[in-house]
Length: 352
Image (cartoon, rainbow, N blue to C red):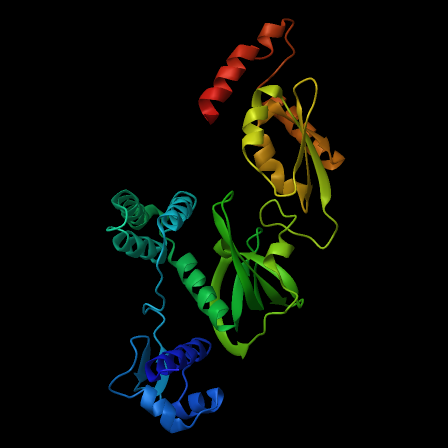
């Protein structure tokens, strides 16, 4: 390996080491941890010629530390990869209700880098970044600080001390090992999954409900058995349980069948078009209650067949709605609902 390549590999190794030790390390400690003589580290990390991502803290025993705000990565993209990124960033810009200057900065950097390749995509990336920056009503300094701290702890495999507020407003403190951070588009929220102590089991925190986070010196190891894709395999969004998933069976009215079949709502879904034009939809779901907002969105065009508990809950909601709107049975069919033609026109206008 050429000397320049060898140095680049070693610097990358040192960056990763410092990233996992935010408190900083001396040159001697770095040399010992990566198994080389201190003179080698001194050569690579000369005091007057440090890499942009590493600095020497004069106020902390001249320890070397990683600059977590520095540009740490570089990448190149094809045109079709750019389009994939554009779709992802549009989702980010439109499905979050918290201002995130880091997200805006990332979009802006990407937009500027793509100006030569595709001005159209570049323009919209830059505009999305401006929108995310400009909307002051979405500012939540507590949320941003919590997200930043969790990100640093996750990247460095360090435990944290969190203060978490329950739905009933009570606040509890836990030691927590962040294993994974997952966005939840439906609720416009983000969640962190990890080991909570107590009770020493994997739990999920809604980041918006975390009031404070402190990174601890204690490190953790991500279990080989932890697989977020497997953990959330049967989740409709973010809810998972240790129990077996339940089968959900829905029946969709013919006027919305085309729209339902245009999307894959769950990877293991099974659909069956019946002779009368209705569509049966089936899938295994960890917590069927998490589907309620989606099911409600279809209104009377979606009927829950199974599980019984979910059907009963929708039945009670329908009764409450009837009471709220003072609904009474009408003698004429035309007064009970829209005509088939009106419903078809409405669905077409909304979904096309």
